[in-house]
Length: 347
Image 1 (cartoon, helix red, strand yellow):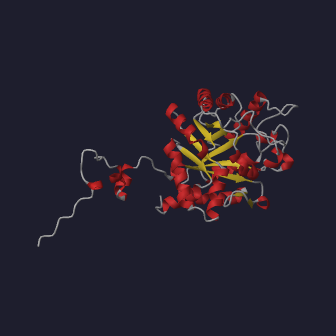
Image 2: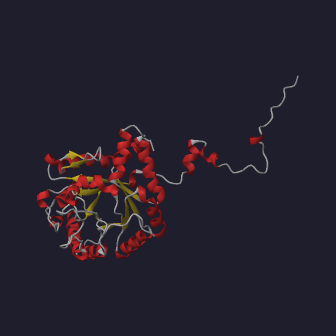
Image 3: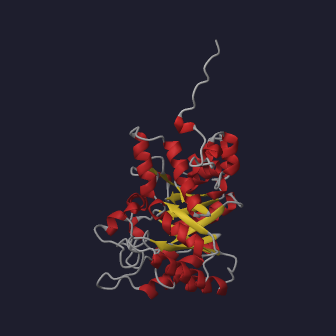
């Protein structure tokens, strides 16, 4: 007796209504997924932010940022040897200043013998090929925790602050900074810094402008890390950092900084502002950097420690999102872990 041929279920029957294009074909096997992948994340995309203090006695873990600590210069050198070995191309340096050195005008920011210049000299001597990015802002140095010099009412004086930032940039360039990164959001500071650098013979020193820096709640762990949280207290920075509700304004800010001489521009924070990164990349033909900020780092760490998420998978997915949005480089506290995972072939 001949076996009856099974009938094809109607849902699989070929007919004119059934789609001939099946996107899942390009997801079936690892080899084809690798071939058609639109974006890739590599170690060369990562910039590692580090916090430096005067002495080993001041070194400590940062409670709000598990795995991140403040480093003295000697131990920072040893720590960064591992980063260099992993292929991290650049670090961003943020100081933790002794409270006794903080003043209303933040004058310690342009002390040529200060913590940051000495750290830059040391790191350039130890790691000649490591890119050194110095933060240009007054908030680590001011007794009030603001990014600028205030008048009697507490309002930030733009042009007076810009002059101080230019002096700070020159001190950093003289100490060996490859890139000075004004993160203050004062109007016109990129142009003034660029002219100062040119006039003093630092035409090769690059400017990474925090061009679209929002008044964000995601900065809280960072302010704890650099010691400005207590000084700032209940004040905010909304008169100079951007309103999170605005996006077209970011494009105007970026355009101004490029016109003034910025070599690359920053969007900060990162993950809540991927749309800004995307719009900036579509509009401007300059490198766009993103800052995966302390609050974003802390959330992933806390969720991973609670067992709610897979840390490695979530970190790599988040970093890849920056590349997909258009970022050319990413400042991230996950840099060392991400680089290790890449070396292990886990990306």
